[in-house]
Length: 114
Image (cartoon, rainbow, N blue to C red):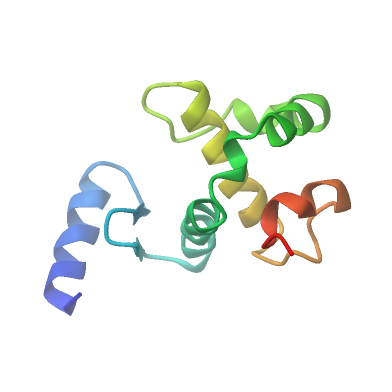
């Protein structure tokens, strides 16, 4: 995507209060700082792995261990799907996009199946 389009998108996103987004239809991330870029990479990883954020295993583990991540999300409409997708990307962000830092019981949801 050319730089002018990126600048326009970032400007529009900033007007809406967003610092980035993952546009899954074209597999494209737009972000204006490293933390936001890691968060959007988390959304990309979720999609690439077939949405492990939507599995009962992931949801149950979130509910059991760290349900607080469901409370402060960027979901405009608080659907279950959005809440768990955001929690997936939030975890990826908190652990700096490093699977080795993610708690071991969550790692299965962040790596390709062998």
